[in-house]
Length: 274
Image (tube, rainbow, N blue to C red; front, side, top):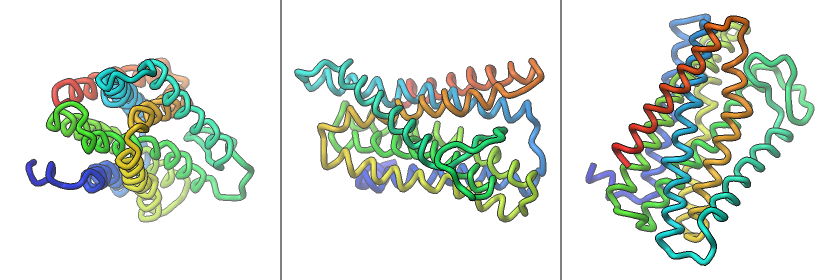
């Protein structure tokens, strides 16, 4: 751990985000072993991802942002700063949702600007779009370390717990991309390629996030809240609605069970490590 703590923040963020992308790729590799994915299991995975992101939004992002503002005795109240950042995060994702052509899993019609791209490409765009705030969240978490927010060890473990949580929920998401692509007739190798490709944006967003807050310290609490707002938007707009798409009430309850489990696991990671 000493060698990792001695690295520059941007390199820490890059390595952590490469881990989250690697978990996406590992999940996408499930397409080599399975051709179909059980709807109930998919609902469980989507619910799990929702729970992880909801918990991470508060314990890894909003709470540190609030504490940061209060510790600095800012003239602007902490509730206003995090509210602005949170709202902007949701607004930017809303705009992207209306502009970037994409299609959600299980949906019949594409969203965003009209496009002639194939359905499978639009599906990858959808997952890629919501992976951006995950990478950004990891980046700004490691950026907080560079500014000495709280104890260095607590900030480091908090950022690591966020990366671990994002990685855990990326594993089922990778499978949830590649396996449906295989079901639509794409080869296993191409399905894997596009599945892992949906997560490659996370290291890029992480480095951009950490560099932004490293050089503009005053933006850090806003950036933390921004990432939280973007992730909550993804959960409300995509993950939970998709997890509830079922005609079987038992499968619907699986999504709720997954959300509860994901929330608990991420909460334990944040409280015990952060």
